[in-house]
Length: 341
Image 1 (cartoon, rainbow, N blue to C red):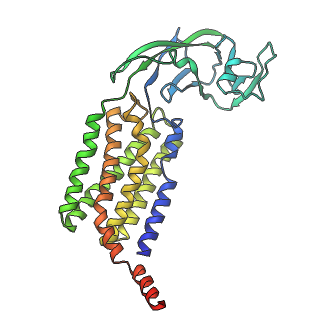
Image 2 (image 1 turned 120 degrees about the vertical axis):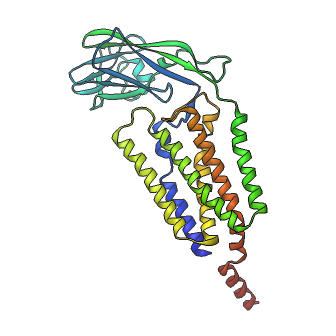
């Protein structure tokens, strides 16, 4: 029993280190949103500028090609950000830079009448919190069908030529919960009945089917979140490492055990899959899922991971009970206690 507990504890700790914290950080802690800002383009069109929205409508990211200079104008029409050969600089005298948190209050220059440029990046890509992506603070009513609610635009000066980055804000509420609850509860009830009335061989077959389902759906859901948008090579490498390390750890832990011990370890894996899927509950309460997967596929991955994870725990309960009843360490302690008395 001690060796089983040790393996289970080590597995839990190891998987916690490869938990989807990176994916959560990648989206600013958001898994889903009711608002989605989408880029339409530059009006009039100019070359050298590429834009995308991050986190639904939290951040705007600009990438400026080499050989082009771009100035983003702020809420008051003041120079806010400058993209040039030297990198990206923020105007410390810009109220927009203060409100967006690009310039800290300690470095803000509130008495200047001319731009005071301070470097914020040495590259040519930069993302910042942009309030103008959500022109309406709230939208009354609505349903799960996405609809355009308001246009947005941000003025730019590209190589001395004025233009505007334009787009639309979209809104949708979360889907109906009933089909997803049915997809959760019905399979879980079926597994519980099979465990209650079935024999140990059936429990082992169930565990063998549920384990890859839980782990595969768990990885699919979180990797979809991690690689949403245009992921860099580093993010793709992190996603591959996350999947590879998780699969290796699970395979090593399960492969090193047998019989009831293997069922117990599979139950630990199921519990971890269910726990790590909990943040994805937000996807069922919001209209847009921030994932590279289609919204329905992302929600399905979360449901499969959570349901299969809980079902693994249920399937492993009889084996865990047998282990506890036949625990050599417990018997030794009871024997020693009897000798002392």
